[in-house]
Image 1 (cartoon, rainbow, N blue to C red):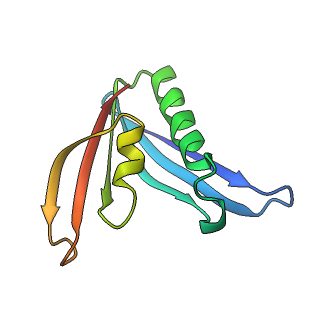
Image 2: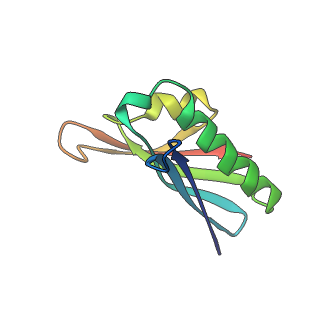
Length: 104
């Protein structure tokens, strides 16, 4: 079991984004990926995720998985090669919780 954590910081050291992951049994689990609203759609989230995936590969991971909600970022992850393997409807009511995976 290993943890990965990368942060996105301003020149002054303010944290404005980051990713927290876990590695175990050859899998990367993306627990949290966050970028400040004002910095979204500028490629920072993509770079954080790709950096974590690359580090996971170097440490022997062959696959990745994560979950997200319909009101968050399922399309973001799909664009980066993740595929839905599970879904909970009405979680919360009126939305879905998606489980996605990707071969590294």
